[in-house]
Figure 1 (cartoon, rainbow, N blue to C red):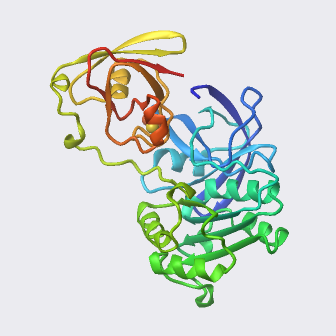
Figure 2: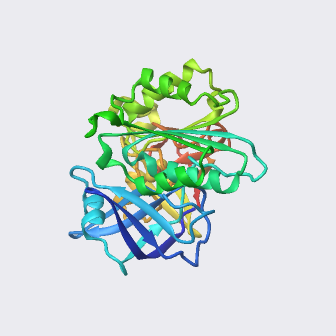
Figure 3: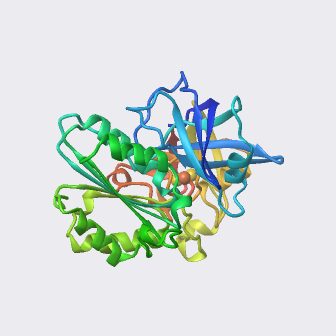
Length: 350
Ligand code: FES
């Protein structure tokens, strides 16, 4: 999980005015990933070491090389650099693919895969779509994709190609909030619109379909509300969101132990590190302050890059959104949102 790898840029494809797909030569050290996973890229930009997560838009089943599709975000140092500066031949350090927003196709499946996305939220969905269509010959794939207008659609050419290659199996509808052509369909992708579009598809088996939702939180909330109408089992709905959750003082544990520094033992890369965690700090914040190099990316409990197993002691997590209930039960923790509650905490990060 915490393996690092250097990837060489093979091609940069312009998607829109502010988005590109960066294709990497397939690495030899790590050769596999799951559709829907992401890479954490590490770059030093203007002397500042940055790391950001970007979903793989390539499919492990239909693409030889790996690719991430990146949209420039306002004020985003890494996304601006990638869109404006990255070129063929560049070498970029990344962490191994990670993430649990995944779909693993099974050739014998007869399934409905329904995806609702907006903007750059298409990137993991695009990988899932390709994999499902490629491997599951009897499955159908449905995509609702929201963008500002016809010119802001990432991976548009690829989606159109899939539509013609998999006619009848890939059902795809665009929604534009500010369409250039009045006939393109318009409106915000709100709850009512999601319901209307899902009903238009006619052939979805709602009780069995797998749903994937990825985009801005507002759009995802509307989509979840819409899915309630169809009584979709929660276990059949996956979501992906890299928006950091706000960290507030109220989320810190109120136990007596949090009032003084606690030393936590972390085993990583065959070494034991002693991390002194001050009141108000997360374990990862304390480790980084002490120049202890641990794997991390989002720093907000969503990407699982910092996942470890707590084998001793007690930890309280602020927002463990990236972990399933089962993982938490097994003792897995995210140290970026984890704070020690007892003085005997021992974690293995691997
Ligand atoms: S760094 Fe992303 S979950 Fe901790």
